[in-house]
Image 1: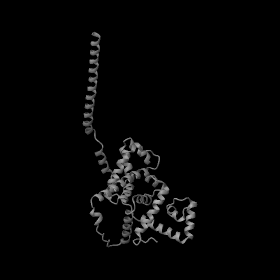
Image 2: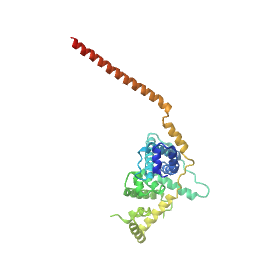
Image 3: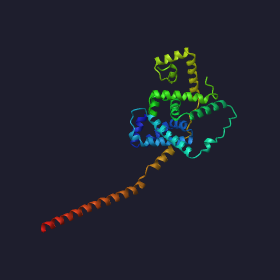
Image 4: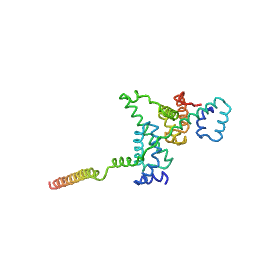
Length: 182
Length: 117
């Protein structure tokens, strides 16, 4: 059963179809949100909220584009408003965890290099502006085409290319000296 | 005009037509600066790709289902609100109906009294 058919069944109140859709997509949505917000607990919460919205909006869903783009647009919108809320909260009250973070001790055993690379990349991704980060995550981890990313972000494929170029330049700066990029 | 270097990203992502991609590849093979940009961009995305995807340790379905049920008003809870609304609506309707009837009666009496005088 394809996603569009499932959505049609969900619109008719089919619980089993909704469960099938959740099971099919929860991993991808969670991974996307986790990269976007940087916290597993918040990503789980937002992932659930995404599927609740899918259920609520099922009757309005039209299979004009790809279901994946529509789904990730909902998740992306939720992640962006979550990030805005968090930014506002941090501005209102001084966040100790953000400003007084302890330096993580390096892992003592093998795999140190891999760990360091992954940590450096995660930190560099987290420092990207929201739209650039979203474009990178959608391209690298969700393997969306420029056309699909454009549909998620509400922009053009040309703008996506430009976002990725700028993201690459910023990432290169952040990773310089930490990761060998030659 | 767009410089070839600005299309490296799209070329690596497989977003160019075969002809466009060929132009970019050929240029990068002959131009040391663009060749370096190609290698650096490829190495950067390779490093990014090596970060494993965060995995869910369990399905979110049970929690999601509980959350949805909590949001959907059940019939017994809806019953009170609906009942209260129905009683209010019926009261209003009856009030208006009796009011209209009464006004009609008064008008009739008033008109009849005019005829009598």
